[in-house]
Image (spheres, rainbow, N blue to C red):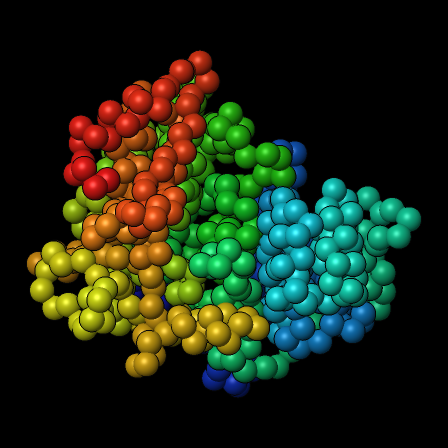
Length: 514
């Protein structure tokens, strides 16, 4: 099936969801992720769903289907009900996706959390989500139990590792609920996917406390597929994708959901994601697609081992998660001259990508996808900006846009204006051809006297300096000036960079207010 990327993707999804609706006779099932996933896993039982690059362990659609149905039965048997929450904390191993699929079948809400959270950080997240079950690694069990004790909260903890004296293992959990279970006769729960929350995804808050975007099944099916708008072939727009994102990122979640539906294999790893390990995975498995952040790409570029990696297998590369400099974009294109390289501007609150940059000038995030209404408003007056090349805050409407932050009505109210537009908090402008350009995060702008200072602009200057591995610019309060820019610089091993060198560099290239 070929054609314009977005239209072709929509036609393919319409075809597969129409078969789901034909089976059930329920029109809204075209958004029921559980039923769509079940049908997709049944359609290609011998297809390889995922490979753990650390062990070369492989998992078929059939195996994932059987384990996820058993997991669903287990969750039901221990009393987890519709719209209860479960939490998953683990690296990208073979079993990671199974509780997600089980939850989608039953209308349970699932949240992927950072397995490196400390006790207090985890306490704050668990207070919001209040999970009935937590799936984690053995190394996380003590931290989880301490966080639960601080909250006086009771949740069942199941470990993906070996069983210990007090904690049930995931393998034991599946086996315990395998008796008399007929996989072929399993039916997902009936519910309204327009209002049923499927995922709680962490997103940054201005207070420092976490907030969780609540993505419904309908949000997910409208939003997640937008990341493949540059593709024109379905199913299997590519054979393999390389997943380096952790489970708390939406770029990892959408791969878990879409790989069975679009029929491609995830190459992931249960080991630490280092540059050398990534190079090994690329050379061994030759993935055709990946999603990476500009900061991770910068780390790869500065590795001494990069020349030992062959990037020629890549056909599609999506760069997103933060501002993408022209230097990063050019380096990616030089390494992968035959790949379609795309800047992926998206928001967790929009469930995925907002624009398509394939046919836009370098540095542009692209033209907004037609599934969104967009506008840019003045930062002071909130009035619409209609002329080109004038920056303002981007606001959105669309069926993939969330309706709420979970258990946080105050932040939900603050996220939307009086007309129901999502306030993205991002400053953008468009050119006369309606190509949009990212400037900075509104909350990241520093106020020096009467000037607005963009940390991203300064970061783009410092990151080019020889010997700099990474940099972050923020502000420190000053009674007279309001805020003063400060840079945190990480040097490459073996390089001695002085603060004065960085100050002199910036002073020579920007206005004195910066």
